[in-house]
Length: 446
Image (cartoon, helix red, strand yellow):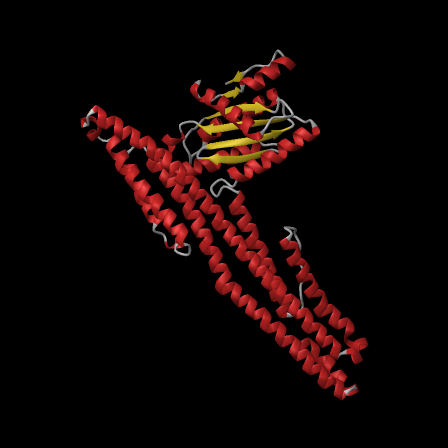
C-alpha cells in the first residue's frame, strides 16, 4: 500500500465539495509525502551504507586491541617457548588486521606494539632455552635487565593500547551523535513541510485537521521526543506510525538506541564474563562509597583471584580457561545480594562491592563463595577443579577512598595467596577495627 492511499478517500470526498481546493490539497499532500519519503529513504540508506559499517569497523578494532593486549601478556609472561611463539604469531595476525586501517594512528600504534612484542619473544626464547646457560654472567645479567626493561615498556604500550581502545569507542559514539543530529534536522524539515501543507488546507482544516494531527504531527513529535531522550540518555519509545516514512524514522531511532546500548555495553562490560570491566567497576564502586559516606552505612570490598589459573590455560588451553572464568563469574553472581557489584579487574582477578556488610559478614559471605566454587568446579564436567583466594576490606573511616580500600583488600588477597591459597583473609586494618567492636571476631577462615 502506498503512502497516499489512506488519504485518497478524503480527496474523493473533497472533490465532490470543493474541486479547486481539492487540487491544492492533492498538490500539497503529494509534496509533503514525497519530501518525507525522500528524506526518510536518504537517511535510512546513509545509515545502512555508512554509519553501521563504520561502527562495526570501530567495534572490530576495539576488540582486536583487547585481544592484542592479552596476547602480549602471554608472550611477556609465558613460561613455555612453544606457547610464546604461538602467542607471538597470534599477536602478529592481530597487529596486521585490516580493522586498523581506518586510523593511521591506530595502525602505527599497533605495529609499534607488535615490534616490541617481537623483541620480547626473542628475549624470552633465550631466557627459557639452554642457550641462556651458555652465556656469561654479565651477558645473563644484561639479558635479565633487558627482560625487565621490556616488561616496563610493554606496560606503557598496554596503557597506550587501552587509551586507543577508549578513543575508538568514543569515535564510534561520535558517529552515532552525528547521525542523530542529521535525523533531528530531517525531522525539523518534515515539520516545516507539514506546516506548509497545513497552511494550504486552512479552508478545509475542520474536515481534515484531526486526521492530519493524528497521522502526521503526533508521529513526528514522538520521533523528535525519542531523539531528544536518546541524546539525554533516557528511555523513550515513540508510538507506532501509520505512514511508512515516519515508521522508518522511528525504526532508525530504535536502531540507534540498540546500537548505543551495545556501545555502552562494550565500554562498561567485560566481553568474556559480562561483569563490569575495570573502569566501570571503579565508577560504580565510587558511587557506592559516596553513598556509604553520605548515609554512614557499612560496606565491604572483596578481592578474589583464581588459584593457579595459569596452569589451567597451560594444561587445558585458553578455551577451557575462558569457560572457567565464565563459570566462576556465574557461580559468584548466583550468590551475590541484589545490591552487590562484581567487576573483572584483569585476568583471573575479580572484585566485589558488598553494601551493608560488616567485616564478619563479608568474611562469612566470602567463605561461602570459596566453598561453592570449589564444590561446583569439582562437580563440573567442562572445567577442572579450581579454588579461589579472597581478601576482605571494609570501610572504616569517612575519609576512606576506593583506591586505598582496593589496595588493602589486595594486600589481604596477597596474604591469602602466600599463606597457601584457597582461603579468605580479612585485612589487618579491618581486623583491627572489628576487634575493637567485637573481640570474638576471627581473622581468617579456611
